[in-house]
Length: 174
Image (cartoon, rainbow, N blue to C red; front, top):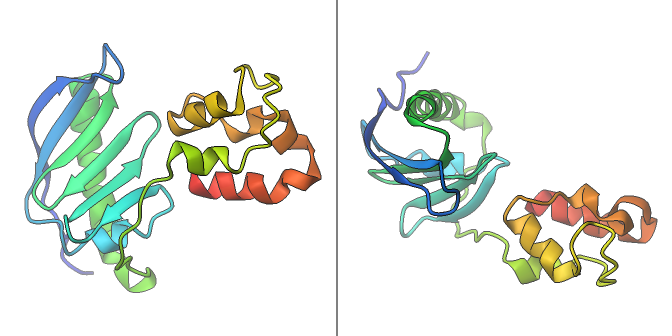
C-alpha cells in the first residue's frame, strides 16, 4: 500500500457564505501542495472546472462547491463548523483514495471550464412552456446552473424522445 498523499487538510478559517445566508465557507490548508494530485481529481465525475496553469480545480457538491488550489481548499454552503471539519476529513480521505488509485485514472492535462448558462440553454427545447415551474427556458437554465432545478423537471426533456440526446448531454454537463 502506498503512503497517503495528505496527512490532513487543516481548518484555517470560516466565513459567511454570500450565496446561502445561514451557511458558511470553510477554508482549509492541505498538509502538502495539491498540484500533483489535481489532474487525477479532475478526472472524477463531479469535476466542473480545471485550470492546470492556475493549479485550480472546482468540484460540484450538493449543495455548493469545493475548490482546490495548490495550498488552499474552499468548501461552500457548509451547514456549520462541525460539518466543515467532517468535510475536511472526508476530503483528505478522498484525495488519498484518488492518489492511491491514480494508475487506474486518466489524469486531465488540459483546461476544462464549467458550463455556462448559455451552454445549458442551447440544449433546452426553447418552448418557454413554464411546465417546469419557471417561466422561461433561460430561467430553467439558470436554475440548472445554480442546482435549484433538475433536468428531469423539464417535461420535454423527460418525455420527448427527440430531446434524448440533449437530456444526456445536460446530465453529463451537470
